[in-house]
Image (cartoon, rainbow, N blue to C red):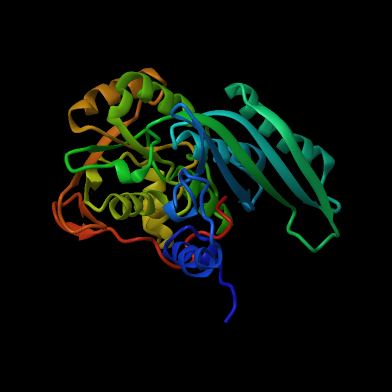
Length: 337
């Protein structure tokens, strides 16, 4: 057997790979906070006094490296800082490692680094270290960037296991934009009416924490595997049934059209500038108001957490039927981020 693309796709195979191939090999999987076994977007190191250092690491291989709405630099800085933010942490710093192919245009590399700087500067985040490597031509496809996001969070952390029956589920805006753009480009299609949604989500999380306090229960950015994977992780880790109504999930018509044309579940397409959040049931309207004031005007309540069979996601279709929304599986969209 050999490694297949699905292992890096962010769906069922990725989760199985981590649980069966990596976890059994390591005796220590945390430092007393959130660790590898928790399968969250980041890890935490308790600092005392109810404060945690939040750390997240990710590698970015998106193809093509430049796309409508952004480039691999903007994606790499945003992605790891968003992973920190959805744990409830204010992003403070990041580090990067850039591996670039010999012959890559220096002007393009400058654009990519500038995009990373624009994200960091907009959030007041420091670049505190990094590394650069150059590989011989043909031994790597253009450029790969790894980033480490670092933040500070106050308890309680926004972990998925905090969700309870009666809580409401929201998204901060239309889902699937980034995945649809990259999918279309990889198939050689013209992208005229759509661009990647890549942007920091910390302003949304900050607004919700200030408005709701501990009634903001959990958050996750639906990147690889999309909203479908995020909802399944929520159901599994909270031991609940998650119920959503597809008609209430904001999604651009262009995303639906590309997904339908290429035979892909639209809810499995990645978002790189949205968050799924869980709030106490009676605070949902306050949450929407806070998000809209923070610039997330298309935020919506899409469902709720219920008692029932743990780990199941039940989706009401636009015509009124019910279906199980399963974890994405297979080679969804290779090199999406």
